Image 1 (cartoon, rainbow, N blue to C red):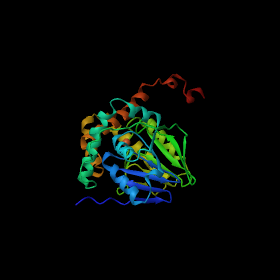
Image 2: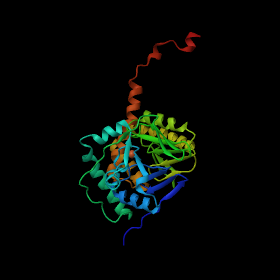
Image 3: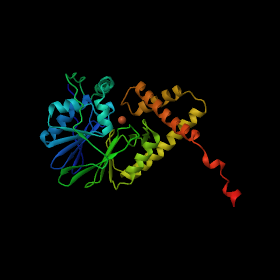
Image 4: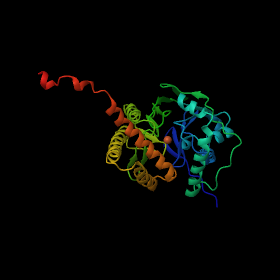
Length: 320
Ligand SMILES: [Fe+2]
């Protein structure tokens, strides 16, 4: 028996959630349509089937806007481009450069296959997707900070470069419905357990600054690139994400400073994350926790190594 296609979820008048809850893709609809997120190789056919279920002509979907180039956020691009040759792929300058790198496919293909196996295990798809003859990841439109994407009917997306999760990360804000498409910018959130696993893989300071940059927007709704929409309002959620990040960082530093081997921390944290977020193998999550240890340590090293110019100055008390 084949797996049933999950029905699209209507989030607002102009926004649908497609794909699967673990790996969602959003469809914004004005006169034209735009997908936000690039899906996975295993969900490409599913996304196409969901668009059909909605009764939307694929020709109406003009764009696919990527949030970043991790494998679980770009995998459906080559297949959807085959199905819908008119689709224009949009991404930040750093994402476009990463996707054009000659070694990109070497990293993408095994990671995408691992995700497809997870989807088969979950019963979301029946079998691994066929290997394609050609994986076209070229970016048609490079999105700079502040760019606007008008879809008609008053729907307009604003581009915000938000490094920290990855150097190429991009978030999008839609001003008519006040929706913020965060990508992975706030970490991995489990709505059932209210847990946030902070994901500052490319830089802790960048990550915190990007969360703050998004928190000042008047968003009513946040849509995440794992586990769907957050209806508690974008700003409180982002405040929660920032608090969780600072706590996670402090705890990592405390453990590393106490002499606990990093490998033990990675194993323990990967087992914990995988228990509620089986979106990658335990080994892959261990690697990601290693990145968090590295980024947390880097911040401490920067502070410790910084010239303490003020220390030579007379203290306020002495000068008073
Ligand atoms: Fe990611």
